[in-house]
Image 1 (spheres, chains in turn cyan, green):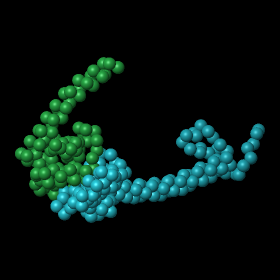
Image 2: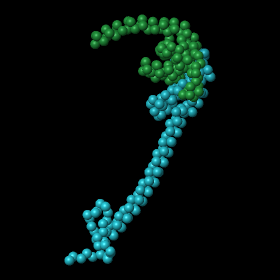
Image 3: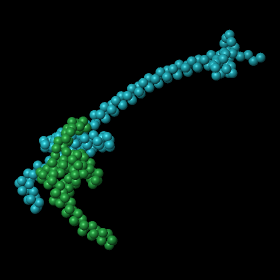
Length: 155
Length: 109
């Protein structure tokens, strides 16, 4: 007879799990398997906890990112204040209201149509070109009054 | 005689039938001529036209999109319309001869 070595337990053979119904082990093997299973279960529980915490962190990060993005997009529908300030300086009082309103409207439309960066670039380009146009107007008038325009034209 | 941009701005105003303002004029010019003009260019042209009494402006409504600032709607005056007609007729008369020449030149090649 081939006697199996192992601790003396009440039952010689133990059923380990439902899946292993047909797989009968010695008491020692069963104890080892049970320990392994326990440690596996503990590890999986720990993993689950870690994953749950990671998930919570991830969702928090996502919600923060989302709220930051919303705040950014809301804030960025306004054109740069410096740009508006420059336009405010170079325009006449009679046309200031409509020019500034038009600049804001154009920026808002462009940001919706082409995106924020493109809208910002277009806005600043517009401010630059408009400033040249508006600033040149009094210079040209003054030159014209002094007759320098004609003099420069002859040269 | 009107300058090119003056003529284009006046035509854009005419197309919009009393609802033309800075942004809409700029949009129409870009759509029709393919060239983008800054608000500065449009407003200085409009001011020149106002000085010549070709264009009048009336204050319109304010919207949230504009930061609560009011629009100025532009319309052509009678003098402005006749100046525009004169310029367009002159351009058309000049085009008649030029087109023929261009065709002859194109066939000759």
